[in-house]
Image (tube, rainbow, N blue to C red; front, top):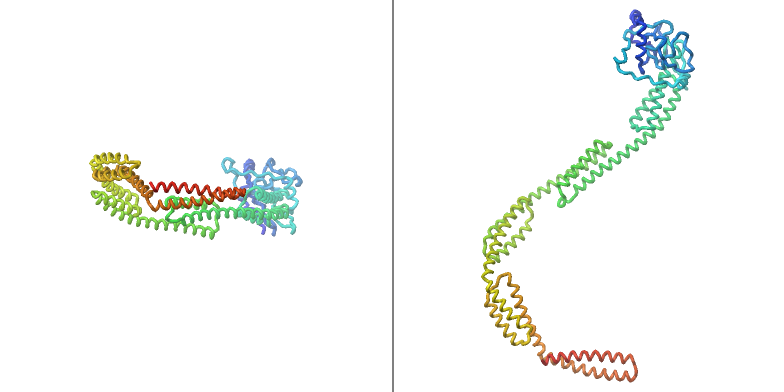
Length: 549
């Protein structure tokens, strides 16, 4: 349905007349307030299904002849004589020229404020004259100001601009087409040069599709739609690329979150007896911070995946906390048991520290130390305190024993001097040359050794070892003499010598026969056997000589 221009304005002639009597100097002021986007009040952006009203369209003011305007196209018909130059492609109420008489100004409109008093207005972008002229060839204006556009489906009414020239009427709708074309071109450029999100691509395509469906514009709308359709394929590729990038980023995010979860699960699965709880707890807290950072700044995961990963992560943390509490509860229990056991050992050690039964008590302290090592560990503070008490009792006992031994050693110092003199006498018997005299002397030495008494503990092994060496040498000499004088041994030696002498005689005869036969092999064999038997005979004869004394 055709809309009447500026329907919000009062229709009374008196009010319109008052607005049109604005002095001539108001016109330049209105020229400076040009809005880049608003449409003139008298333009009708709908198909003209009824005749325009007899009442003249309402305008703010008539422009003066020196108003600067930009021509819509080079080939547009020349303006009438005495008329102002062609209006801008987007005429404003201050730039529209009526056909014959001044038109009344709407009562709501007031002269534009100076530039300094109002907000800055974006300048109207320049129009390519060739593009505007080409777009104008797709439109037409009838005598009543109805503007139509030619499309493949036929002509379509896009609006009505009564009271203006055909050039002025077309300029407005051409400018609208150029604006649509610029939007499509901008979308095309952004598709190729910027990273648009899938949402931006879909929203822009939907908006441009809606705006180019039946726009109130004049131009090659079919070509513009075809251009937009061609961009759908590019948009689909960009959408697919963006989706692939998003999926890749999401996959990387899933991998990173999974790595966090797996590391937490490894920590939770560590043997409680080998894990270091404090560093492990710090690692889990750091992993939780990483999870939060990834959740805040990383790609968003789908809810099932994120919930599954979080469930695993939360389970690992819960398992770790449960095992830690269980471990420390057991540790506290074992510490208490170890503390009780060590307290009993300390009490026993403190009871023994004053004992003077040096040997038995020293053994008891060794047993207590063995039990201490097998009692386990209490808490560090308890362990240190109990060990200090145990060590103090032990040190007290052994210090008393050492003091007693020192006093005893002082008493035994004179005995040591006597035994060292006896050792000199005993060692003079070596080497044993007269076994009978040596045996008689060692018996007297042993009697005097026992009578000399104890020596200091530090010297016992030394002096006892020297005496045992003399005694061992005498026993070995005695054993050697007995072996030589044994009749059985002497008889065996003499019998072996006789057998060897008989064998040697036979071998000598064999050797002579081999030499006579000049058989070198038999000569060598007989000579080797003869040499061996002679060597054995020599040894046997020497043993028999020793046995005879």
